[in-house]
Structures are given as C-alpha cells and as structure tokens.
Length: 304
Image (cartoon, rainbow, N blue to C red):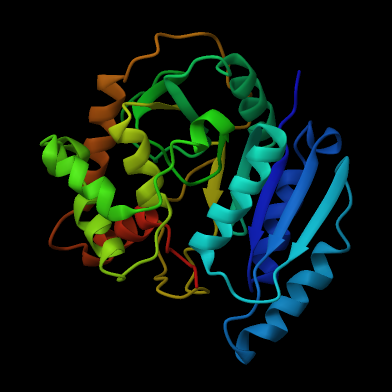
C-alpha cells in the first residue's frame, strides 16, 4: 500500500503538540510514514518562548520513517501556513494527510486515511478523506460521503487540492449566482455563507471555509468514517478566541474502519443526521455552542 506523507502544522502550544504526536506514534503505520512538520514563526515576542519550546520538542521526535521540519522565520498565520504547506507537499508527493497541533488520533487513523486514499485515488468525484465525525445520536454507516470538504484530520490528492479556490469573493459570487446558499448552509442548520462573508471582510482568515466551498461548488465529495478517528483537544481556553467546550468531544474508535467501495453519492441520511446535530446545539440557550460551531468550520478555533 502506498503511504501518504503526514503534514503537521504547529504554533505555540507545546503540550498539545506533544499529545498530537504521541497519539500519532501509536498508529501502526507511523514507523513507515514520513512526518513533515511546519512550525509557524512568532506573531509577537510573547509567542516566541512557547514556539521555541515547541521547536525543541519537535526536534526530539522519533518513531517515524523520516522527519522533516520547516521552521518559518516569520508568522504566516494558520491559513497561509496550511495553504502554502499543503500546496508544496501535494505538488511534490501527489497526496497528503493533514493534522494540526490540537488533534489526537485513534491508532486506526493512518490505516483508514491511507487505505481510503488508495481506494479512491482514481475517483475524481472524491476530493478528500476526513477523520473526524460529530458525536451524533443517530446511527451512521461504516463510511459515507458528504458534499464539500472538512478540516479536522483530513487527506487529499493533488487533483483534489488543485480545486482549492483561495479567493472567497469568487466562491461567494458563484454560490449566489447558482442559488446555492441555502443548500450550502445545510438548509439553515449551519452558517457557512455568513462565515464565508466574514472571511471576505477580514473578520476571519479561514482556509477551511474556502476549502469546503471550493469542494461544494465543484460537487465533490468527502469520505467520512461512521465513528470518529480524531478528537480535538484545543477546546480548553489555551488558544485565541477559544472557549472551553465539550460540544465536539468524541470517543475515538478503537477498531479499524472497514473500507470498501460504496456508491459515490452524498449520503442523504447521514447529511440529515449531521444537520440534526447542528440544529440541536444551535439554540438561544447555547450562544457558546454557536460560537464553537462557527470556529470549527472557520478553522479559527484556537489559532493565531
């Protein structure tokens, strides 16, 4: 099986970074995988000490086939760091698995990602593979497709990332011209269009909302596992704009996901289960919940 390189994007949280790496090392394919770490530069002097601590740790990492570290001298910010790093890697290697420094993975994560990348490599309708699944109440299938793309532990190919549109204005214009904003917003269950407008206005710098919109407009699909293989540990007030929350907390799957070719169409039942979950936390009593959903989809949960 061909293994994709792993890209890990870090900033100024040494404890979170260590938890992410230690969990990743427990994956059965870790010692056969190349790990590429992108360490963003400091935004200010207050960040430098923590970044130095992160960099000291990442230089001590073992347990992977190879480790390559890129230390940015200046601060690119999360969006530009990911866009630049992912573009460089898919152009060189053809595929990629992407993690950020607050994502703890199941020991089955790399197996699922690599098997799915190989299984759907030549299916142009499939744009990416995702590792995180909401803590929904409904029963999800072993694997399923949803339209768009996602940002919590994901993988793609060069052909997928080549569809990424960096200009939010172009994306919003096309959504409006094709009368797709309601569908884009899960029929009102989520606020994607608003968050894309906020990105355009400079109120967030999200790469994730643009990645999702790019895939959605091209009618591309992302494969999800029925049980989550990724858990976010960044909901602990350690990052900018971060409120403590357990809304997205999940139990990681301890068993491998059974992969087989399924119909490459959006699973409407799974979509409604996701929409139902999003509606359930979007109430007047849970303003913090709405903020968590916004930050999840705009990719600014704990970022600079």
